Image (cartoon, rainbow, N blue to C red; front, side):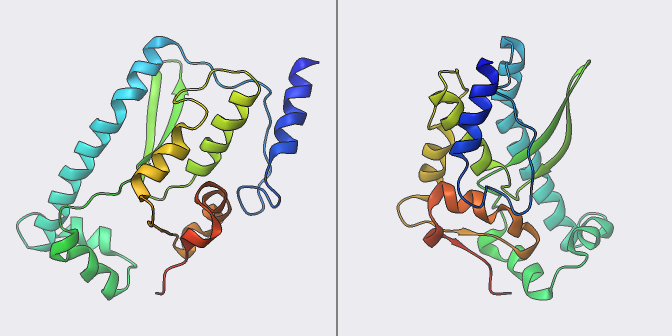
Length: 189
């Protein structure tokens, strides 16, 4: 009965219109519990993924310059408008990696499996919402009740904005909830 009450509280706390366009959820009245080994693994993952992305970025630029196999740049540029390709190859963005990395992880019997590393920051607002609301239920959450909200403010600063591509438009509601509607935009191209 307590879990049903927790689910009802969570459902009532969901922002009007939800956090994603047209999505339904499977609800749990209890936050995911992690053992110490899992927690340590996840806490070290960010730096490892950032190093991987920096190496991947160097490989892409070497490929585009003809100093590495051409297929790397060809594959990564596939389907992008020329102006996006040139922007990505520009001097200002040459060493840039995304400020938000979102690993898609599966927990298996053998441990964690990384299925994708994405810079489309989907799920950040949802996870922040879950942090806040599971904490309100008295449950311990990694990063505390305001962990991701505080991190988003640190990354964006007082005037930073979030630009969401048409491909990732489903994530717009969660980012609007997290940082405010006035700071979330669609790109011009």
